[in-house]
Amino acid sequence: MANGDKGGWKEFMWNPRTREFMGRTASSWGLILLFYLVFYIFLAGLFALTMYIMLQTLDDHKPTWQDRLATPGMVIRPNTDETFEIVYNIQNTESWDMYAQALDKFLAPYNDSLQAQKNHECTPDQYFLQEDSGDVKNNPKRSCQFNRTILEECSGLEDRYYGYREGKPCIIIKMNRVIGMLPGKHGQTPSVTCAAKRDDSDKLGELVYFPPNGTFNLMYYPYYGKKAQVNYSQPLVAVKFLNITVNQEVNIECKINANNIPVGGERDKFAGRVSFKLRINTIN
Image (cartoon, rainbow, N blue to C red; front, side, top):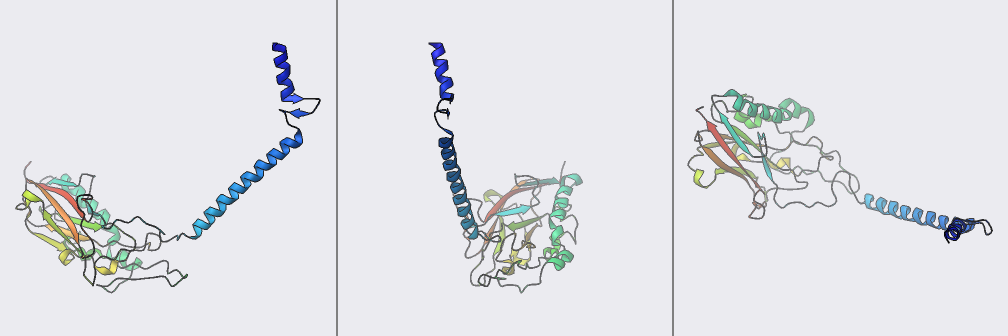
């Protein structure tokens, strides 16, 4: 019985009388292989054609579709970690010098000399529109100068320690880039305001903004994307805390003010605003 089964398997694998391999002749196997070859070539061609058609609808410089938030986020500098806490001791140089160094590194691309080389002097208080002309792409697009000197006392040029040594620290705020966004309607310039949270309102003291009133000038908008606008310099707002209460933690929230940018609600508490903690110690 075992020999019979073995003989049957051998005949199934190769039958010398009919010259069949696994029950099929060479011509039968050839037709099957040819069918699958043509079938998979067709699938590959269909996939390649679909990808080609899809790629024709894409723009290298601008996303065809973007799931854009209605309200852009905001971030602060210096930001040494993800906790958004700035804590230092005036008497301990090492505790605040890292913040000054972080701001130096962050503001280096905004040096006036570099901005003059890369970017253009634009007309303030109006959008810098650079639309395409039909199929003719207006790329690369120009960018407006944001000179470091605009930040005045918080530029690091007048005070290389950004006020940290005197207990009057500077915080730099920027709004996240959103392609095509036009903040502010009817010529209203978006601005930043900062305030203490709840029980800390009497601890905040006086603030001063650079540029004046904490504005993001309209000439820096719209943003056209990293590829289309390679030299784009995000506008910044600096806030200097002149007499904040020392030796206590102060919770601060800064938000964007514009008549067409809603501030985030309960679903997204960080849209259009940024919160951080600031504590300046004077005793060891």
